[in-house]
Image (cartoon, rainbow, N blue to C red; front, side, top):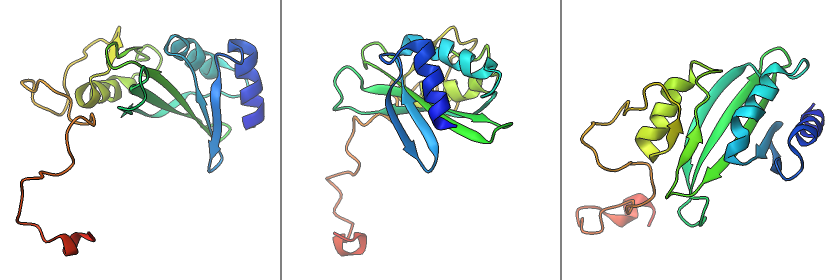
Amino acid sequence: MNDQIIEALQAQFGEEGVYGLGESHGILQVTTAVENIVPMIHFLYAHPVFKFQFLTDLAGIHFPDAKGQELGVIYHLHSLENNVRLWIKAYAPIEEPNFPTITGLFATANWMEREAFDFYGIIFEGHPNLTRILNMDEMDYHPMRKEYPLEDATRHDKIDELFGR
């Protein structure tokens, strides 16, 4: 069915609108532009055969070395009727991390988008309540961005051999 999904998406959005095609463990992965997210998800939701009507997850990602595409969102969709899963990825520059909200189609996207905002600083335009969900409101940074070293280099109380170093 993955080939049928690719054909339908490329027919609807063009080959330039559906790229980065891949498959992992039978799950189709596609990449698209931010402006295609809402129309593409609506298309897959309303499609008479595919019926991707369940949002399994929505997650933010950060690739600091990918200039112009540092922040991204992965949408995990599931067609319960066909037992088929699909990942849709889109990327935006860190200076303008704006994505459209999909809360109008999936109510569960509300908290998922708030989490991506809280941890990555991704702004979901049109979201009904885009506020922090897990971190303190006073935080002036987004903790899942790879902007800080993983370990405190000044600590001397660790024995490197115990950590496989």
